[in-house]
Length: 214
Ligand code: AMP
Image 1 (cartoon, protein in one colour):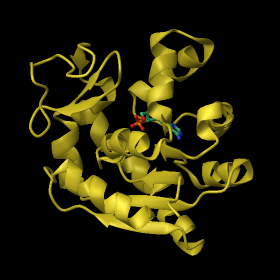
Image 2 (cartoon, rainbow, N blue to C red):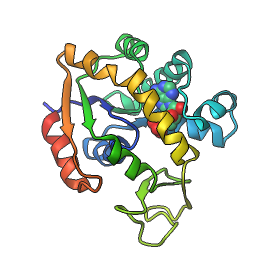
Image 3 (cartoon, rainbow, N blue to C red):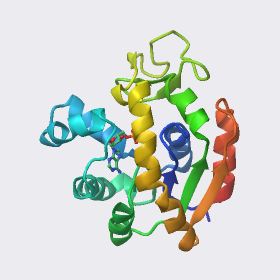
Image 4 (cartoon, helix red, strand yellow):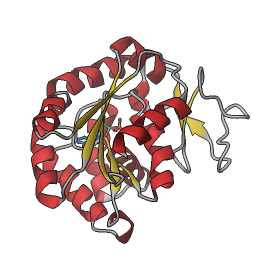
């Protein structure tokens, strides 16, 4: 049976979002990115958005309770009842423990990439303002520069993808998030997906992930 309650782990720029955007529709399950949910709240200037905007801009983490309350609400929606891909959450051990109280997890898929690859990718990453599709100025160019292939929306560089913020986000990743690899390993849920090229072909990586969750 295909595993459908999935957590995608890996540093920023490891490709989790890019792969989740493709695998979610293939399996008929939603791709839930906490970063994306926060950015939507910031854009719409909601109460939550106002609370988290400065933290996110600086590459710091949003407090666990605030994050997991948002995740619990999202997981309660109809489309998440068959399964889900969590991208960017959990990001700390307490978040993983809170998630365990909300739902079972079938597998944690860890994108294993070096810092060099991460920095190369993030400094060229662009996202669509409207539909959030991820592009890369080096490896995954849109057909027309600055315009989303899917919805025609404007492409932009995230504020936290600026070189000075990328280093801080990696530091936060190693301190707070990397320990989750052992957390899920100890539960027998970890699957590792090695990636040794910044321009690793996306269909190949998607294929590898689909294979390990079957
Ligand atoms: P991402 O799009 O996953 O890179 O997330 C962008 C930013 O949103 C992160 O650098 C954090 O500031 C915040 N964020 C996203 N997910 C979480 C989370 N699970 N816990 C805390 N902060 C988060």
